[in-house]
Length: 122
Ligand code: SF4
Ligand code: F3S
Image 1 (tube, protein in one colour):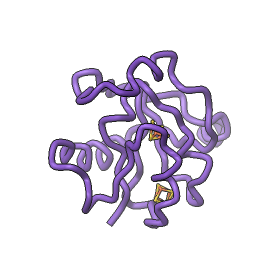
Image 2 (image 1 turned 135 degrees about the horizontal axis):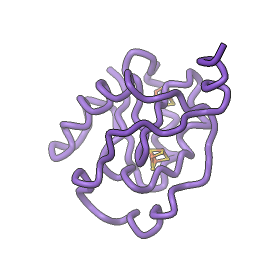
Image 3 (image 1 turned 90 degrees about the vertical axis):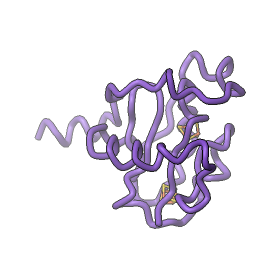
Image 4 (image 1 turned 180 degrees about the vertical axis):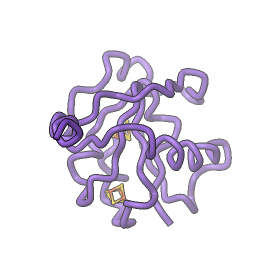
């Protein structure tokens, strides 16, 4: 079991989920975050933090968003760690109520946390 970031995160990326995660399992893409299922300890505290309710337990991911389970698995191995909350995307409020944003998904990595970049440079 693990928690999964789904469609509502795309083009919003509020990142309020990040600051409560005890094990740093969020990874940053250009316009959404994902959770590393191998790191998530299923505490569930991130769920209530997300203002657009993007996070679900994998057993409760709505049928229409099932593919996000695989997206989280795949991109958590490709994108950098994000450890601290940051400003939402400029598009966040205008896309917060948009349904089914899959076509806007950007596979490019985000910047990740400064400290994780420094780790990589060492
Ligand atoms: Fe992190 Fe807990 Fe959310 Fe998993 S369920 S991503 S461990 S806060
Ligand atoms: Fe995304 Fe919600 Fe976190 S919009 S970045 S899952 S707070």
